[in-house]
Amino acid sequence: MSAVLLVSAVCAEAVKDVGASLEIDSRLSLSEEQEYKSWASYVKAQLCRNDQSFGLKQYNQYMSEALKLSPDSEHLLEQWCLGRDLARHPERHAADLKPIWEEHPENVRLTMLYLDLLIQSGQDKQALETVLFSLERCGWRSGMLTLRYVELAQVGGRSSLIEKNLRHALHVCETADLTNAHVAAACYWRDCHNSEKESGQAEGISRFKRFTSNLASSRYRRKSLWHARKAANWPGDLEAMSAFALSNIFSSFGCWEEQVEFLDDLSDDDGSSMDKMVWWCMDYVRALRELKRDEELKEALEGIQFGRDWNHRLLETAAEAYLQLKDYGRACEMFEMLSQKEPGNLRYRLMVAQISLIEGQSMKGLAALAPLRGLPPAGCELKARLLDQHGDHEKAYQEYMSLLKLTEDGKLRDQWTPRASFYDGLVMTCIALKKQDEALKYVKALYEQDPEDAHGCNFYGYLLADFNRELDLAEKLVGKALTQEPDNPAYLDSMAWIRYRQGRYGEALDEMCKVLENDGMSQDPEGEISEHMAAILKALGYDATAEYYQKITDNLKK
Image (cartoon, rainbow, N blue to C red):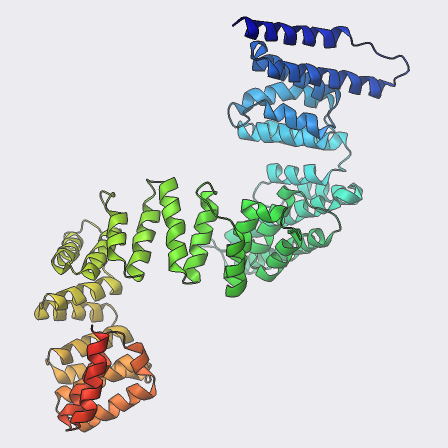
């Protein structure tokens, strides 16, 4: 204890000594004198930081004194921030920074920090007044502050005042910072475009008004992209905020090629700059997805070192990208990370279950759903399909029936209605339970949802043939499907099976030959086509060939 007190006394004396020994050389200029005093305050702050008896308040006080005297020092500004938890009580930190800013309103970085704190504390009006005052003091020569002004002043449409200020800023802005002024103009015209487009799509407006609105929004789009391209091609480095805004403009107008090119230019050769930022990774992956550049997308995803501490929005973007690439293992891994980061997020667990269904991992999918209570209808349908895949057909049937009952009772209404995938699953479950009449009932319901849908027509017709019922109707239904897709191997196989049931074996073989011509065997993982071929050939007396196809069927069904 005495040792601690001794160290504290030494630190306290050191702080006093710094103040006592501060003798200003008369030959120093005013700016040199201020810098000297600034760094003396900084030393005091560091001594206080090493001695907890002084408290954080004393440290912050000395750091504020140091920053006030040398506002241009990035190191002092960084140290001022390090001593505070800026995310908590931003209004308190804004109040502490205000007197420093008031003495140096033309300092861009100081003003930007002060603006961030005002915005975080909900003081948007004061933030706008602050940025306007700073811009007036620096003569509108700061492109970065102009960008922040546009963000704060935007009113959801055109503003003659904003446009006047933008023109002035673009005219007088310093060359090194002109790129940020172009970004500000691009953001302004993008917002005007969005506002005009929204008003042009409103109900009840005249055709002429809609035409003029579309014309205006097209003009604003061109203006926005002109400034964005100017900024993207301007020499010099971009601040992260401006780069993010530019990337967003390219994506909002669907200029994916330009966005990828712009983001590539931002990336250093050693991969140590903006390409490590979350927004850069997300925008780059999304743009490559839109362009369907799968090989580049794979390479980009491999370059991102994912981990459980990664931003959840980036993980979600990566998961969606892996789904597009059909890399279900990696997609599932991402969604599992997300569900661990946000255990209460229903969507992430449903996605794990959905991917598990695709991969044939029913137990994994059911385990993902197990902790959830009160599943939504889509989740109940997914659970039923997983149970059916697992071989628990009775439980799957009960899940399907529960959903149908809720629908019939009107308890789901706008929440959910049975779709094709639901009836597909229910019919297959009924077949597994040998409930033929119910299978036909629900496949008919599937067909009646859309009588022109080729899949529904074929499924209904095939099932009638398989159960040897209403073969004329089955022929009509499958014929309708073949009219839409004459070379579909599954539909041709259905027609062959109908001909077989009708005793027209020669015609059945003709249809099966068409199946083979359209590479149907490679699309027959469960052996149904080869089984039908074996039955048709046997009926025609080609026993040896029939036996060959039966062996193929047996191997596929093992």
